[in-house]
Length: 230
Image 1 (cartoon, rainbow, N blue to C red):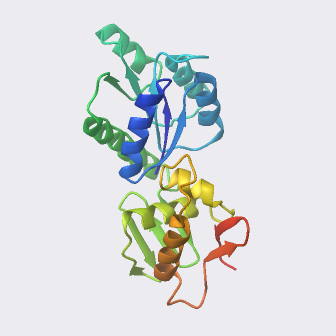
Image 2 (image 1 turned 30 degrees about the horizontal axis):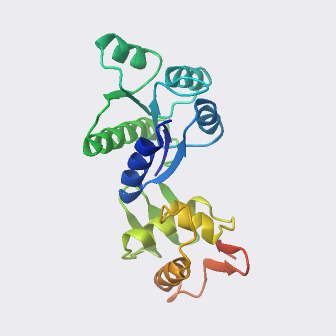
Image 3 (image 1 turned 135 degrees about the horizontal axis):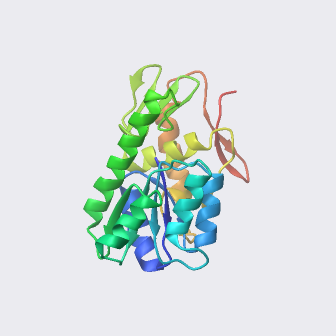
């Protein structure tokens, strides 16, 4: 599952991002209103958490704009504004839920998960493909249930292995660099000067490819890794 956080306070944004990554989400963070709006209009997300007071364009205007564009991404409004009137305004412009700062991360996670489930239920009724069900060749991944299978057999994966597989699945056919893996799977914004990525890729490859004739996880020398069926 992929979530967008639009929050100008970097400390708060990093705290939320860390929690959702630990819960198995792929996370994008924007600290500016215009950048956040652009991301929502261009890319697909399972949900978004949007602060109200943002530089560039405020959170309510972001929600109003994407709704006018037909974008139905579930949005939870996160704000320091506490009055009932302000909460109502957040829902009126198209927000799906509203939480007041300071907040409990556990509650935030549960609320976002509930929004995603509700949206998936509505989508399934309109026969829209489930973005959390991914497949390449005979390898399947259910991001919501946290399950991976190949040829119908369940593959036991640790958290980081699952995170890497989900990231590769969402980018299948595209080469992803070690730096991208460090940022999206390990939440590192620096080079740790270790071979953690190589080790993780090796562990995942042993689990999804070792006992199968068709290899799916490939190394592109000098560039990174790609999940594809040849």
